[in-house]
Length: 236
Image (tube, rainbow, N blue to C red):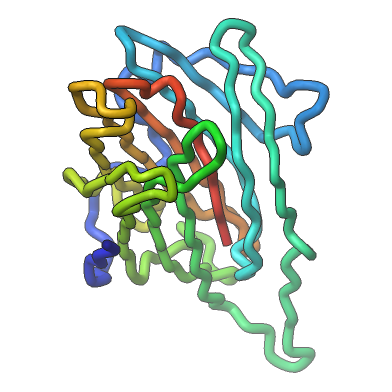
């Protein structure tokens, strides 16, 4: 089921380009030789049976979708990006030859996906944030317009496991960006083994000049067979 939270004017809260708790534990991973793309950054850590993968990337808010799956080897510190669908083109801003437009409106949509070992989609969380950029001001150029948060859970996946929405929270939100998190839960992911499996997505979006934005996506997994789950990302 996918539920939506209505859009609101962004609240005056701390900037969104922070990171989830325990950020001091993250270590930087390197791309494998067979990785289809090298990310701006990938950091990860494992602690007490919890697995965290955090991806950072910049891109234009031009409505074109890119998607990819990530596999992380916590022992070697190596990651691999697979099934990468790249952007088709970079953003182009057209200026009126008589009157140069000063304010541009942009929307960024970032989806975090939880995938099982054979890339079957288990659940997803999507943060969308819209803003305006004033290219003529000498002050802070960005103004938040709206935000929304949606989620989806397989009930069941093609292998018969059921995922459910658990909870969500809004993080930093202001003219400087927006963040949010969604937690999903499963009671039979480990093939009927007693216990639960958790997958929590953290997403942040931060505006950049000329219609660019930067996003972070963090997947935290915990519980039965949680080490078998990995992260997929879609952004446009």
